[in-house]
Image 1 (tube, one colour):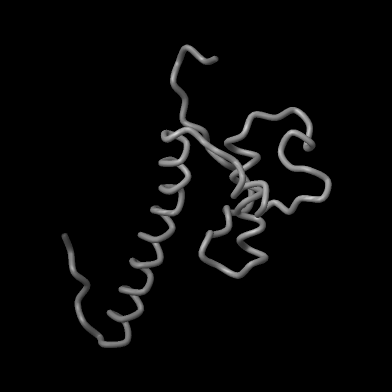
Image 2: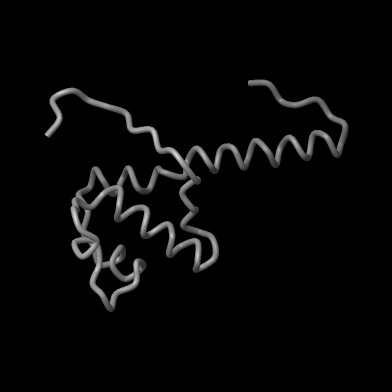
Length: 99
């Protein structure tokens, strides 16, 4: 276990959203299992005849990990809302709201 707290920075493609198409949800489940279930061999993550969705949904994570997983998309949702608002502002020629 680490003695010093760290903030992981994920590199590469963005993690798919869990509310997307089934293919995206499969990728999302794979990412969550890789990130939050201890493993050193893929067989520790899922069975040979198991989908990533089945493995993820069968896994019992601690309450802290469950909260982290639930909050993984907050940043994306905020950016989506910001982008949608920016489009409305451009279309209407209005001034953006500044908080």
